Image 1 (tube, rainbow, N blue to C red):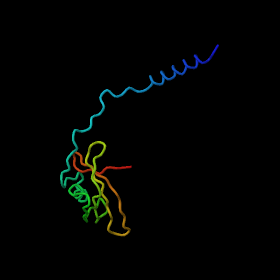
Image 2 (tube, helix red, strand yellow):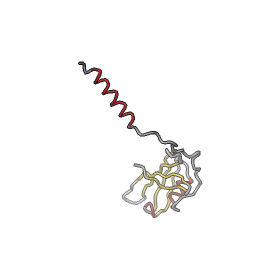
Image 3 (spheres, rainbow, N blue to C red):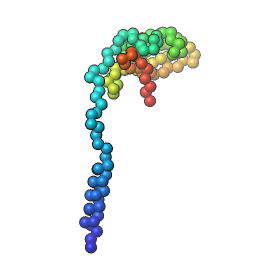
Image 4 (cartoon, rainbow, N blue to C red):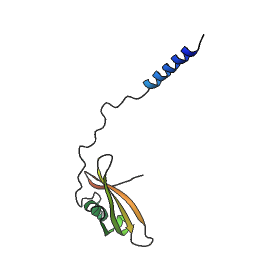
Length: 122
């Protein structure tokens, strides 16, 4: 007796079992927002002077502001604006401390219904 038909049948049964174990697709995939939330100039959720500048400025602009939340007097530079995967308008910006040790950090913020909010990017 040949084992070839038995091996073929076993492979087919395993393939059907594996295919049947897949999760079904969601009934209603989550819909993205119809449009991105428009940036409102100067509208920052936290009331921060640095975030107010980020909300109002365009990429390439820079300004020195006093903001205790970011370490006192800092230089804020808008690096880029982009749409996030969740269809929010976001901005990448740099914060540079003006006192020694001088340190530059890249931050991200997105426009939400509450205003411009910092987001963590990992």
